Amino acid sequence: MLSNIIRKTTTQHAGRITHQQVRMLNVHEYISMDIMNQHQIATPLGAVITTPQEAEEAYKTKFAGKDAVIKAQVLSGGRGLGTFKNGFQGGVHMVTKPEQARDYAKSMLGQELVTKQAKDGILCQKLYLMERVYMRREMYLSLMMDRGSGGPLLVGSAQGGTSIEDVAAKNPDAILGVPIDITVGLTEENCDQMVAHLGLEGETGEKATDLMKHMYDMFLKCDCTQLEVNPIAETPDGDVLVCDAKVNFDPNAEFRQGEIFSRRDHSQEDPREVEASKYDLNYIGLDGNIGCMVNGAGLAMSTMDIIQLKGGSPANFLDVGGGATESQVQKAFELLNDDANVKAILVNIFGGIMRCDVIAAGIINAAKNIGMNKPLVIRLQGTNVEQAKALIEDCDFKMILANDLDDAAAKAVGVADIAKQAEELQLGISFN
Image (cartoon, rainbow, N blue to C red; front, side, top):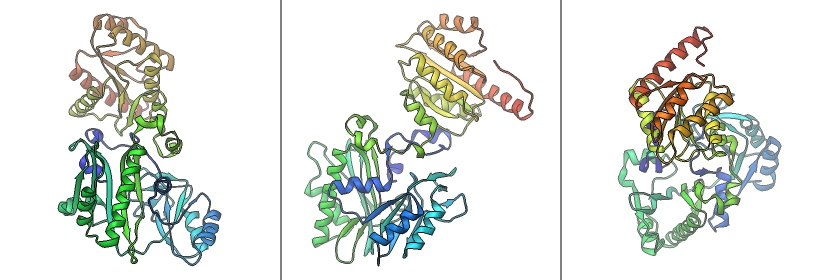
């Protein structure tokens, strides 16, 4: 996605993310196409497939005499170049007859597709059988919220159908960004500027303008954070069609976009993130071995950074917020304690609005309730910090207190290394 170029994700600092990360709601291609149709955006004929028999029947009834494309419905880019764990190559294939659709479905459904974005594989439970579009040429269009311009940004390139990141790297001038005044909306001038950049003229240019207007209407009404179409096809007869789309939605708009959010596919997400979201915890799984529980996103980022500076690797980003309840703290500990990759846990809390002694009591109770079996390093600063330290020192549960963040990170890295070695040597050492 072009947004990967414009906005770098916070997790660049902390290692590779596992599974599909969901901050904004990301839906499958077939759902994106359906929502687009509801907003007068033209897409090719398509059918959702869940069994090989459905694939065969759909081709017979909807695509007889036509070429079609069958696509794995997984929330990952690079599907076409991916490989299923059963050895079957590619998540996108041309189909010219019913039995071919059936055979492809047999090889793809129920299998995990490994892509450059999902290196551990992601389960394919549905396919999208779509009419093949013969293109005169392929283009790229997207709408996204842009920090730089303080509003929506219309982005386009005449070089579509390929990785937009590669286009940006090789030829930045091929990509045009047109800021949109949110108080005015998408104007004719905005559209004309983009149509000219795409090299469209006459009736085709008018159809492209209509497409942009419908895209912008959907972008606003559906609370999208990104609406990316790649490619947009110009057909030999001058039509303009959306052939593939990726749409993200603002999670803060769930209360008014209930129908869209009800179509969220939890099977495509890290189950830890799904569970954390039920408790309003901001959790992102990483591939390190030091679990982190912090209050505040900025403090969480600095905690992960200093762990790396000390030679360690964070296992997660976990922000419990400034007003965490005891149930939230307990759920956070459960997530970290149940993670087999986590060898030690670092708790870094700044007691501002919440008092440190209240936080400490919550940590002690949560650790006891879940039977914490991993070494725990705690750094507390703020209101009533001395009372908090006294509570921790007097409790029956073993916890390692640190004086400051530098000390806490060093201890967490050290104890994680000890725990890892003890586990590898099967020494049966208990830290609590």
